[in-house]
Length: 138
Image (spheres, rainbow, N blue to C red):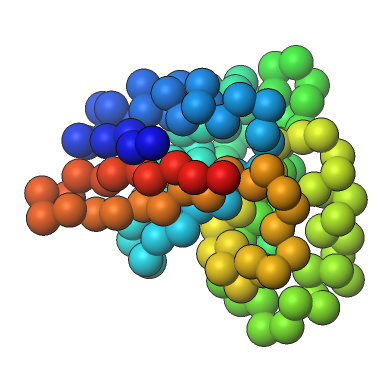
């Protein structure tokens, strides 16, 4: 499955389409090089889900929690600074994965071996026109 984002005006419609294709799966792992738009896309998806908090990259905190208008939690992780997989176990990653809440993961390749079954993998490709192409797989 592919979703194309021609420019920033199309991010919200692409986010809605992404959520339609993820179904009941709430763990979304975003792969892509630095600057490919992982945080920007996650911010848009959170807005579509009704986030009332400001969505920012959790680069230094590892995880940010955002609340929705319905009072639900959305969790946003950035594993860029993780050096050992034990670090994610230390802050209770399994509890987040088992919470039933959406979990958005940046730099998931660093914890690939522990991603739960059903994780939706979203590979972001940046083409020569700066268009983002999201390749979805489970």
